[in-house]
Length: 150
Image (cartoon, one colour):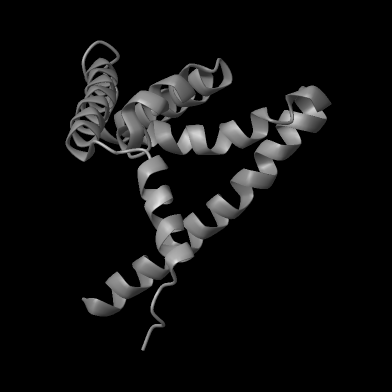
C-alpha cells in the first residue's frame, strides 16, 4: 500500500504539472502521418524510376530503391537537414528506411571533429555493427522458424 503524500510532495507534484509542456497528440499524429507518407511517396517515385525508365528487374528495383533511400537519409543527416525534418515530423521520420540511415549516421556525425576517417568512419562502423549483427541474427531465426513451420 503506497504511503500518503506529504504536503511538500503534493506541492512539488503540482509545480511539476504546471511546468510540464503540454503535448498535442492529435497534431503530432497528423504530422507523423503526413511526413511518413511523403517519405514513402518519394520511395515509390524512386521505385517507379527503377521499374520504368531504368528497366530494372523486380529484385534490382527493390535493391535500387533501398540504396537510394538510405543514401538520401544519410546525406540529409550529414547536411543537418534530416534533424530538422525529424523535429517537425516526429515518429513519421523514423519509420521508413531513411530513419534507419539517420540512426546510423547521426551519432557518427558527433565525431566529425576527429576527422572523417578516424572520427566519422570509425564511429559509423562501430554503430552499424550491432545493428547489422542483430538484423542478420533475427533474419536467420525468422527463417528457421518459417522453415520448421511448413
